Image (cartoon, rainbow, N blue to C red; front, side):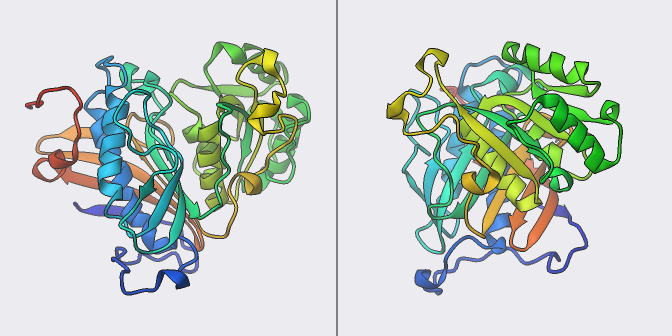
Length: 361
């Protein structure tokens, strides 16, 4: 499947050959994932996106999510690493794969933490709305923060130019003014991505009352919005709001590679249970990017299922299907946009359709 790779003109960011199995290398000498693993991971998210795409717009419950997870699980077995799933993404009641604590990879290569997201529930793929993507984050063993059993997280994400000027503890209007000053624009030019949820009605009013503009995210999670806030070609300047805690950690991995910043506070699952001691978490603590993802070697890869301002969704043509992915590395810092063409005879075998019958096109 041919790829067209675009990447910035930065030292050490030239295209490199596809990663090979590293069985001959002693695992003791490999401390974490390196950049050669990145293009192995894009095959995984592509397969997941293609599988989920078969269910877009069908309103078929968790079928798209389950298909994406099964496709991802199948290909992860061939990736040269010794991975452990820290953040899983398995629909409850489905086949227990990619659950927290599962070993993934071919058993050789670096010891890694794995975080996986194929979209929160099925809102995006079932309704064919933007911002659905299949994503995977890989870091050194012990590097990914585990927010369980807490499910929600308040987030503030910005790009490298604003990483040092915002504070999630400050009022929204102050952060908007700080971002505007750092970017050399007016507050009225600042665009803030916010998940379109009833809980954010007050936040949206605050942003608009301050004079800034709101870009509502209609999809299943806010990973794409967080990355867009740090992407040089995006119109989004900042992400604000409460979303999934697991997705926050995965987004932090992406921002680590991009030099951006994600600040967060865990949000109680039930507001009446504030500060429940058995969670093991401090809800008042502000978590920064380095708290959510540690270590010097971090990889992130995502493929669009349905389109967003970050990535195009899966597109079908006569005899072929195209996908678009973003591949990020922290060492060396690289941002790759990968467009892949999948001939039908090549990619159909990777689709896992959990419908109880074969789908004939």
